[in-house]
Image (cartoon, rainbow, N blue to C red; front, side, top):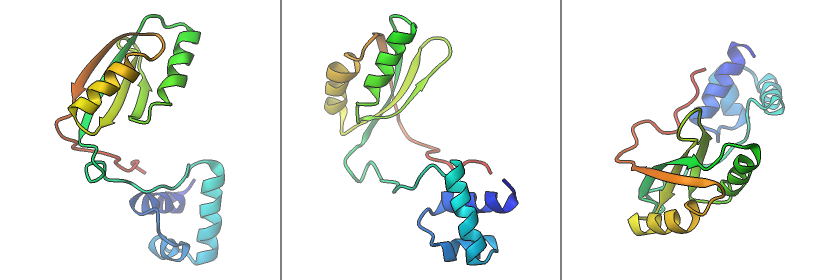
Length: 150
């Protein structure tokens, strides 16, 4: 990966809807070499996909919490069962396994506090292997979906 590839990636992080012509113009290439580089970046996995960034508040999801999960056990089967189940909860935007205690950090979104309480009681606390959940409410997002520092 060279400087031009990094320019392509940086431009696409800002606007994934650029046409190849627009992208080529932004990075100083003609269309054919830009298109070849773009396909190579996609094939290599450097570009994992394209999607729309949705505004959660506009869509009615105004409540966000960070949920720390402590497991009963850290054996392979328990962790695999938890990880397999947590991906099925659509309100979980991110799930990260951590070193130490707690075992996982979940970024969870809901419409409001009662919606979060239902989710917490009915889905999150029922996930396999969960011993304890601890929640912290998000007051304000300061940095969100920042581009990678290329």
